[in-house]
Image 1 (cartoon, rainbow, N blue to C red):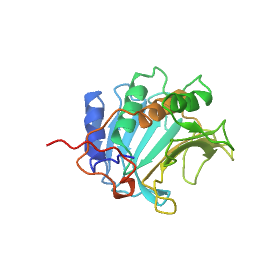
Image 2: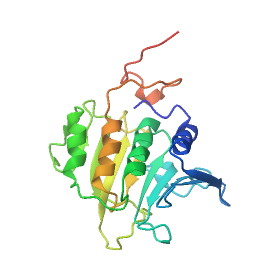
Image 3: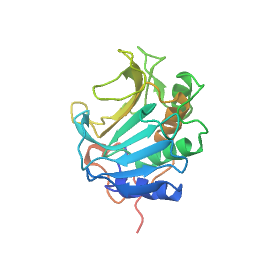
Length: 220
């Protein structure tokens, strides 16, 4: 709900550099970061405008491979501008410390448990797949994948975790995120736990659509 303070590229770039990921610009005017072991990638793709989620352009794409020489990615995750950069940064730290970023043994319940521990509520109609924040402004749900979400599993009708914020019903989304079917649930849980954290975050600007739904402490 706090938004990205219009600094999503810089904050996540700083996180990746701090983790030791290498960066170089691409021919598409994007910025590609690769983990030291070559298994994971993070690309700032907003300039290339690859596609939209919920009517918003994708800004960051994360991916993992089974081995560094693999052409095919095992999974991908996509995030639009506006997403709180703390949640994405915590996900990247979890990916960086995961011994096998393409393998996970936790079930989907671990994602919902991570949210409920933070005070989120299971959806009455879909308690095994969906949770919402107490103000009903944000949701995390296991859904059919939207178009253009790439995954190594070629089967049709796959489901993956989707997250979004829409504090004003009927208004455009504030941000959206999409995880392909093969993203380990444990990694999604790390993102979800950070997203639902009640810890205050510093911001210079607050999204207009979130006004009245945030507790703002101003410092001189």
